[in-house]
Image (tube, rainbow, N blue to C red; front, side, top):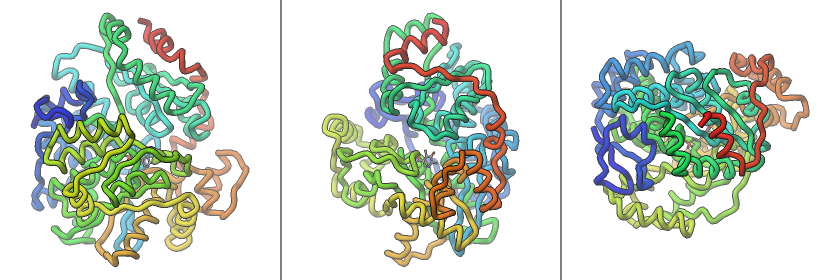
Length: 497
Ligand SMILES: *Cc1c(COP(=O)(O)O)cnc(C)c1O
């Protein structure tokens, strides 16, 4: 299996090269040259495996330059109870009739980003070895909360790597800030920026592409790489849990092998739902993929009209990991839907960069609407939904998952579609405790963050994840706050180059 670039189909690299490079030189994203298939027979066999082996089975079709031993080294290290609080790794909760919550937040940072960021460091270091890249890999991350912490946990103490994370000083939740400031590991660094998330991200991008910085690293035996969801090594682990969930439903007798299911995904960067699309096209029987947004509903409008327009207000919501106006992974979907037309992708994404807007052809719009349904949900309805699920089913979910439930309920009411449905549950309710507690109690509370966690535990009867409970007693290791203009010098001095 080779990988092409969405902006130049003649680029052809191995998976090890795609994973170490992160993004193609001309700015396109790497995609496998074909989507490998899974027969119903294979899906049924997968149901009898433990999660790490399910993952290895799927990876063997995409990472064909990896040996079996290399793949198992990655999966056995990433998907074990050392890192996850549940044996099944991705837990499938049977919520209510015909609806299942795919809980992707039992990893070390309590958000679904762990599913990919626990394994990416192993993919990266294995890939680097395979292509004889004898360099230390330096990961720079700009984060609005979840990705930074998940990347720190994934890369901490991984030999041959170091990681530095920048977050906006006033732009993350108290729990997220504390998670990052107390981070353990000998190869990690965390620093706040006086500015917003865009300042952090622009700074990181400028450092990545600065030739002086690159040659300084080169001279010291180092190179940069990326841990965000443009890296194929972050996307392919997400295909696994949709395959796994389907196989599990068959094994549990909830569906018959071959029955179709719907999949609902609360979406920001379009990474998680694109992984569901790949699972479908590998052979998982899927009826509709349902794309759920908060009021930053650029994707809802796109799927319903065929026009992508980012020229609109940006809102800070109670589901902040979906506060995004540029969904980078859409580029991969459109590349596939245009029949791998790289010229068309260059045109649309060129327009997105220059005018903030593009419109797809009638043919692509029809394909989009055939595979996807889309809807959105505002903050009030998000909180009402958390309350409703709690009252009705005794189940407590986080704000992002609630957006998905509301959009799904609207879809079901509008279409009468009763297909059994898997909802991707992307974060632990404890991670967004202020909004979740407000939703459960019906009023804002001014008790501190830890008291809120205790209160949610009392109401939900859910164990507090050990990683969050421990935070209270951990010493703060990182307190640097710098101006955005100092970011480059900061990185160079921390790396000692
Ligand atoms: C990142 C994130 C999302 C959005 O996922 P995408 O892959 O960017 O679409 C949804 N929920 C939570 C909790 C997240 O951290």
